[in-house]
Each structure stands twice: as structure tokens, then as C-alpha cells.
Length: 178
Length: 458
Image 1 (tube, each protein chain N blue to C red):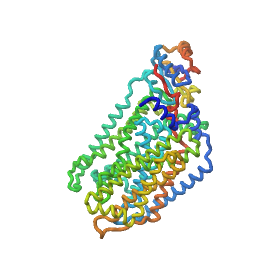
Image 2: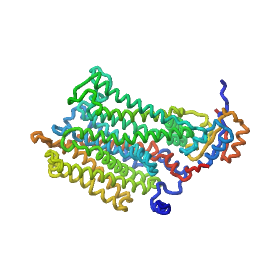
Image 3: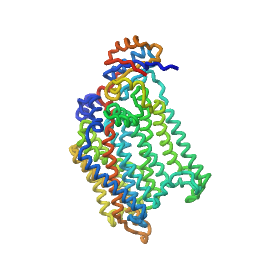
Image 4: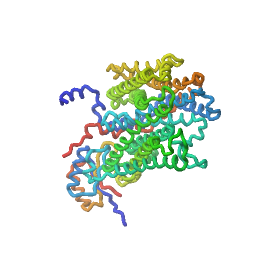
């Protein structure tokens, strides 16, 4: 498949408020494949760009459950099945003594799956991305706010989208080469 | 609460971030420390000294590997000497970092945003220092990996009913989660440094570490969810770590160890010493790097209040220990109390009470709570006090147990001191490096505190 030479159209804004308003209007105008970039998390912005399902909690839950089960099963198998050892007359399967490590393993697996899950769902690490082709985008990690309409959007059109963006009062508009 | 009253209270408080800052100035100021500010002579001298101490630590450990733990002051009955004292002390110090980054995040304490980054770094380095001790005190340190359950030709497994095994899991989980928490917290800031670096190599290194973070709204959403969940997981974890450390003692039957007050009192003590270390680091850092706008009087005051509160919990712990020694009716427990007050180590017990209970009471005075110099010294006193507490628990409890025939004395040797002081050098050397290569204050979380970060819904 031939790659589209243009990745999308990007508008730059001065404030978080302007970005949120612009994202809402873009969404309402019928653009569906859009994204916004900001130097810090902005409440409600993800919803405006059409992001509704965050799978991170599920990943963490599954990770934590697997961790807890692994922790307990490991201790049970090692102390009661494979190498039962009489310690102070306690039964081989002395479950109260196994709780601490079960708990720690739950946290360990939950924490690791939270971080790896977040990175994987975000498609990171990805050192090269078309948005970095826009020189002004370096400010997205400082004090500027960016909105993009991807060229894969059905409504995308080099002239029409730029015109629409101009109506939002951005600081600059640039076409993003892919 | 009455709105006007609330506003007056708020106006009297020092702000979390001094007025007049914008997203740009916050970014500029914090990243400049790493990117443009040249390392001063003071930095080189400080780092150099700490590096020498680190070498001293490695020398002491090297000699230990050569000769065995006979070079230390440990003997029977005091088989747990400085190594365990220092282990508990360091791991306790680490606790403040997680408390600040996780628990205060869940409690929506926005003032944590300017101190969480270096407090987390402090946690990581303190846990690294702590981790050295159990590994080297086992006698045959090259076999330390036997602590982990791995399939081996001996066909044996670790003994999971022992609190020492719980400790292995608690501390290694704690180290892993602290490192993860710290690293993911850095990702957006590393992207800032990548975008601001002038030098190609710097840009590449930060670029690789930031993993191509671009600040997409979707990414931020998942990031925040992850961060909150990680905080939620780290909160019970941090409480469990020192609880498990206290089990190392409380599960044993030695008088002075075998008590149920240990877990809460250890956790409070950990936070107490951790905040003291945070202040001892924050006060010089804010002065030297001109960060008074970000680490304000408010942070100093709040940390002082946390120390006051946890210090009182610790005092309650001492009180209950003494009370139970008298009220419990067990003659060995009663003797432990008498021995602390009048035995050969009585001076360290009185020094402990002075450092941990009497001196910190001056924090009730507002003027001292807001004075950086006073806080710096009080924090130092608390750190000494908390070290003494662990010395009392480990050494003084062990040196006179049930049978008079097995009593003994513990005298640390120069190798004990070299290892201990060496870890302080190692810890500070890591802090010095951290300040130069990573943003010491979380830039993106500071941005969220600025008025421009608030967005009104339609």
C-alpha cells in the first residue's frame, strides 16, 4: 500500500483552554480521527478527541490476580509438594505464613503490568513519529498545545481542513509530512 | 466550612509555587539545571568527597569478602550488628519518597508535586544502600542468591515460613516498584529535555529514555490512570515493607522484639526519618539551585508537621513498650526496660529519647518550622535518633537475653564504621549525579499547578 505523503494537519494553540475548545469544535464539525498534544495532562481532553475506553485498569487487575495466584501457588508447591519440610511442627501448607509473599507478588505483578500495559497500549517506545516532523512541535513539551486531524479521516481535505482550523484562531497551522 | 474563612486561611499560607510563573518559566528553570548550567566547583568537591567515601565502602566490603565477617564487631549473642541497624535505617529513610509520591497523590496534596521527584530518587538510592547490608552480612555473600527461589541442583527451596524470606520479597518488590514509579514519572520530563537539548548526543540519550513520548491526549489519559493505579499499589506496599521488616524482629522471641506494636511503630519511624532526610536534602538543594519558588516555605512547614505527627506516634511506641515492660509482668521484658534505662547502653537510650522525642517538640513553634536552618539541624538530630532507635532494638535487645551466662557486649570495629559511613557517601554521590542529569523537580506536574492548567468545561 502506498503511504499517504501527508500525515495530517496540525494547529498550534496558546492555552489549554483554547486546545480543549478547539478539540470539541473539531469533533463536533465531524472530524473523527483527531488527536491533541499538550505538555501536561488536561482533564477531559481525551474525551474531546474521542477516547473513551481506557484498558489500563483491566490490564492491572489481570496482572495483579496472576501475581497473587503465582505467589501463593509457588509457595504451596515448593513447601507442601516438592520439598515439604517440618519447621517448628507447622503443617507443610501453613497458609497464614504465605500471605505476605502472596501480597508482595500481587503488588509486583500489578505494578509491572501497569507500566508495561500503559507503554504497550500507547505504542511506546516509538522514537520516530510523523508529528515530530513539524519543527514547532518541540514546544509541545514546553508550553504550547497542538491539535491534529489525521489525513486518514474521511472529512480530511488539505484546503478545507486548513480553512476550518483558521476559524479556530490558532497561533500557527502546519501540514504534517509523514 | 465558611467560604470566607477558607479564603483567609488560604491567603495566610505560603503558596505551593510562587506567583508569576508560566509554563515556559517553570520548564526553563528546572531543565536549565540539567542542560545549560555548568557544574560548579562546589558540585565537584561535594561529589568528589562522596565518591571517596564510596570507594572506602567498596574497600571495606572487599576486605570483608576476603576475611569474612570476623572483621566486624558481631559476636554471639549479638549476631545482628551494624549491618541490620543500617539496613533498617536506610530502608526507613526510603519510605518518605513513596509516601510523598503515592500516598500524598491519592490524598490530592498538590504540594507534593515539587518534592516528589527527588524524594523518589532518594528512596531508590536509600533502598540501594539498604540492600547492600543483608547481602554482605550473611557470611557467605557470594551465595546471597540462595535467598531467591530458583530451580537448583540441590533440589531444595527457600523456607517461606521465615520472616527473612518475606523480607526478601518485600524489599525486592519495593525496590522494583520504586524504580518503575520513578522512571515512568520521568518519561514526560525526559521528552522535555529531549526537545530542549542543544547537543546531539544529549538529545539522543534523552530521546531514547523518553521512548518517543509526544504528549498525546490518549497517552496522557492512560498515563494518568497508570500513575494513579501505581500509587494505589505502592501505598499498601510501602506500609507493608516496614511492617515486614518489623516482623524480622517481632516474630522472634527475644525480649524487646516480641511485641505487636512493632509494625505501626516501625512504619511511623520510617516516615519520620524519611521526611528528615527529605528536608536535609531539600534545604540545601533549593538554596544552591535557587529553587525557593518551587520548594517554598509551605513545603518545609508541611514536612515539619509530618515529622511532628510521626514523631509523636514513635513516642507513643516507646511509651507502650515501656508500659508493657512494666505492666506485662514478664520478668524478661521488665529487665529489658531496666537494661535500656540503666544498662551499659543506657547513654544511647537517653540520647535516643532526646533526639527523637524531646528535641523535635520545638517544631510546635511556627518560627522554627519555617526556618530552613533550624529545620536542617532538627532533621539531622532526628536522623541520628532514628539510627539510635535501630541500634537499641538490635543490639541492646540481643546483648542480654534470657540467660546471664550468654550475655555479651557489642563493639563496632572500624570496618563497621567504614561500611556505614561509606553508604552515606554512596547515597550522596548518587544524589549529586541525579541532580546533574535528571530534572530534580517534576516539570510536568509543576505545570499542572499553574493557573493556566485549569480548564473549564463548556
